[in-house]
Length: 297
Image (cartoon, rainbow, N blue to C red; front, side):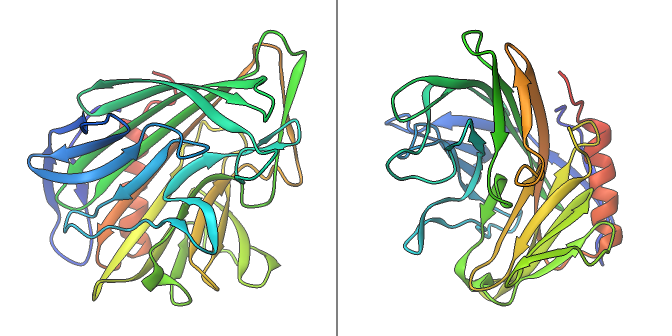
């Protein structure tokens, strides 16, 4: 993703601003912080903790942190994380028999963090390889994160099958103050499918959640790249008993098979904004993100 400046239209006059973002490892190298100047805008857990690496923190331009990690009710919920099931092995859950995103090799290059991972089952067999790249840019209107994951079936397996529950994919657990009061906005403004309780699946180019944090209102949007498989995404959302949203491939109804050596490339965007962003502003930001974000680099 080129660090192109973004014009963000909210309820105020448009502003243009782009800051240089740099990833730096902390002393133990397990956590890596993306900073804009002296201000942290994202934190990444680079070593599996305990089963996978993930984004621990994501800040709005105003410094509000939006993610929740390792909550007592669901200890496997880790901020912003990516996981599915492969050949029946869940990489989302973290219990006996679950898979691990292991053997991380991490490189940093300015605004880009890249990782090579092996998705191993409980016996240590590699079910898939992943090339992951996370880039963050800071603007006056939004913190923009681009998450790239390329899963590849190993050469020693004839094929692998991706599946999982209706919420598996790139998911985020939101801070506690959003529980039961989060409001979701969808790009296509369609009602979606109720799965159970407040859990819904809604197809669209993007989804956004708005809610209170530390006495302020923020909006967190997620974008599906038009070149992704099965675009537009099925967005999982729920507001009670807790607030959650994720980008899914509808694998619970349509498992996906990758043949030996075949890859699946996925590119998603996440925007953290101060205030309540309306659909017009989010459409503008989504289109700008698509224009500056090639699917294949």
